[in-house]
Length: 128
Image (cartoon, rainbow, N blue to C red; front, side):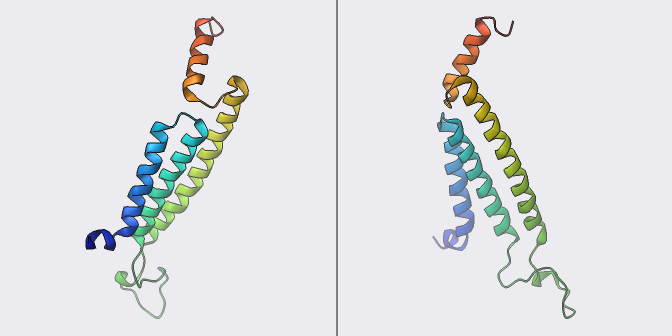
């Protein structure tokens, strides 16, 4: 139990990832799938940020001649998280715009119904 308490941020990240992954797999609504993907992204960012954090550490700016690496927080996970957030926002915007286009064409957000409508269009010869 103490190991879980010591690593509660990692456990929270794993639980969030599981919630997002199950949402991504089990939901048929495209908006809910996008939300699940964003929850998974957040879990990865939380995990990366927790890996780079050092209790009592400072920002990696050399001051007063202190050059020991143990005194500073690792800046690489923070940079990865910031880059990931930018990419995630862009991907989410593209997914939402494609979802809007799908809804305009098929009048549903249910992935199974969209698949059936696309197959029907294909079999009716629209794409032939």
